[in-house]
Length: 108
Length: 116
Image 1 (cartoon, chains in turn cyan, green):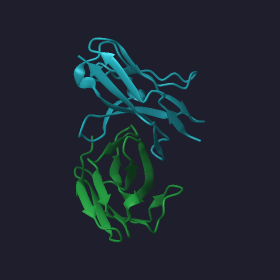
Image 2 (cartoon, helix red, strand yellow):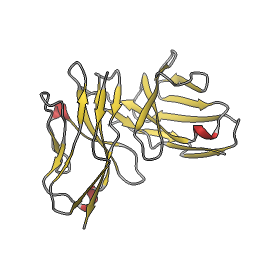
Image 3 (tube, chains in turn brown, yellow):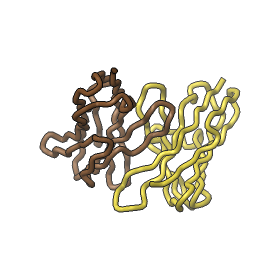
Image 4 (cartoon, chains in turn blue, yellow):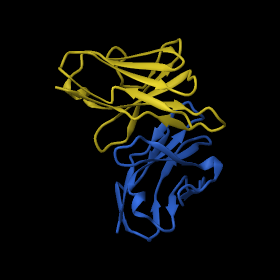
């Protein structure tokens, strides 16, 4: 069965500190993995996708198939990064499974 | 990415009434749309996949007769919560799959349903 876990419900860091949001998945095939972000009172929006190996707003995420992880990282957190972050797994468009989410709070 | 709208953004209704929520893909035609439900401080849960011109595919545990889905055109899917009860109060979100090489989804702003 497909499953996405995000062990931290809440993560608080100070501005300028590095941040890592953890995501682990279970899936028998080759999954597509995404990070979505939901800022306060806004819709869910795509942050980045593993397949395009991009850096968006300073965030990166590397797929580690050995550890079945897709952790989201940023070297220097900004206050505007405070939001809810969801890791998601796609079975090539057939299913889309979200993790429980991690609320990131960046303190001044 | 796709632009997705939902209407209404917020609705309050009495117990026993039915409520219709619309999801529109504004900038391209979508043969498939997805409906999610999000309880407060919880993640999104897929309810059903809406298929244009055919029946929706419901996830396990979602009542088909309770949550009626109609995908009559390539730009519109509707979710009707029939005989709503207070436990149906939730945030309902639709999404449209991306059109490119990636299989990401683009989300609507959501509809907050409160059943009194």
